[in-house]
Image (cartoon, rainbow, N blue to C red):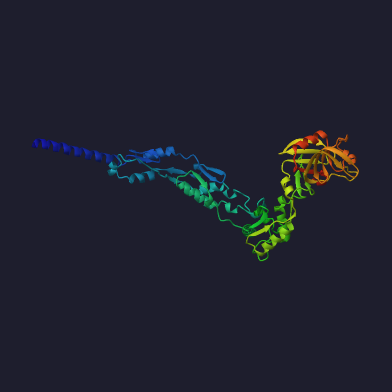
Length: 472
């Protein structure tokens, strides 16, 4: 029995000694190598010395060039040009010494850990600064200006002087990032220097500040069920401007100046779409534009009355909201409104110069024909203007002081003037209207008049023009 106990004791002692030797042996093994489960910069390092890992990391991360990006520009720096070098050995050794080889057993079976190591970087700062001077970073975005300009949205401050790269700030950014091991460096907002403004530019900034306060004004014009809220361009259109085209500051410098005339000018532009009566700009079939100041189609707002009210309220209160109700000089009645408030893309176009009529439906030409308009020699010219067909009738007798004419298709657009067939006419020449024209109506070949009559309805706009009189 004693012998058995002794044998067991020998085995246990021997096992403990072997385990101790194994433990000490592995501790000795890991004395100069990384512990189990060590990854550095995604490289497996267990059992490797810092020198071995350094060689592997240097091979994987060879620096062929250093890239610097500023705005939309990209610059390349050759490491040789700045005596650039890098090495992982010192930080690798530092990390190795942080591992206690006697604690290797704690790493066995545990989850692997990846450590990011930044290499030790060195370069010649003087060469780097000289290299960066060749980039011309301060010139990016030139010319650098600070001034108030006018655009589609009114006046605004055009200032890019606050986006000038500062050479010293850029150098420090590149230097610090390179020391951190980066080779892809972006110069962003922190690399812009404090701008230096001239007195003229400071005045522009001051003017822009007043424009911002002016743009905070609220001016609303109510037109029936519509409300026009003036945008920045509309508000700026009411300002007085100097010879340089920029807003004038009131005496005392508190706010921007305006007067009744400037307010009227600004409102005239804003209200133009609502002021179409006797004020139509029309693009003809051949792309030219005519300005027609007669007719029956459209409304005319009382800009003078609106101007007085807006100017008075703006003068009384430079900040508070301004609301006005539109008044009309001429307003289409309910019947006219249901016909057509504007030209749109379906209309009849009559060229007095060409003695030709065109009918467009949804922007597409569907009918065109020669016509004969009012006789010029007797003063019966067909009047230019923008009208609409207000009455249509089949088989009507037209009666005047000196004539009585039967027509099959009658389409009236301006009092007793209309489009109709003319079975009695044999002369359809382009110059027939000069001496053999109508009493003011638009004579049309019967087949064309019949087609047009079937295609249109009451309310179709009719545009009558002469390039000689109305071309813009």
